[in-house]
Length: 186
Image (cartoon, rainbow, N blue to C red; front, top):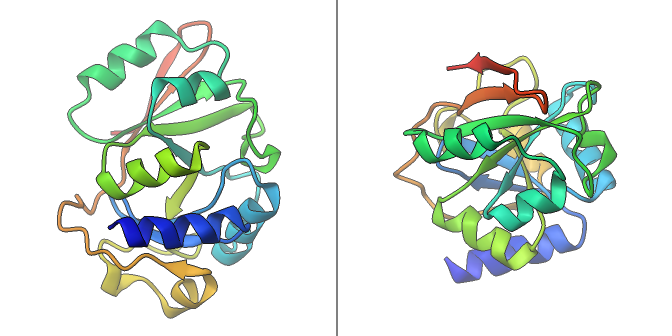
């Protein structure tokens, strides 16, 4: 695994995009602070930039670097969640502008899956995570379902099987700084 982390880190550090396993599904990722790398993912997915993507983080410190104000309920949801959960929070900063949604929000997920967690430790920056499909097509539930267009379009494919994947996207909950909670996907 350490060799794969090193290879993925080198690609990301140089502005590249990777295909990698998460605890939910295979994801396409890059440095979430690099707008050119983010643009490569939008182009590969044929996705409008107004449809933002989520970012993975591995620690509270990283969250506070991106969000000045984090509602207390965010920590409660993260503590109580039994499955991977994405939170959409207001007013991100220190992030590629083309990741921020038109309503000035950003979706984030705290990751515990070993590969992505260790890659984030090495990067010391958030990692983009979007499903490995062309926009509008079904989300691949395993590596075999990922299209050749996606595989050939990334700069590096992480060579790690992930048997612990759920094959299901994360739950999505939107939290606003004025304490409104909205469940987007269960």
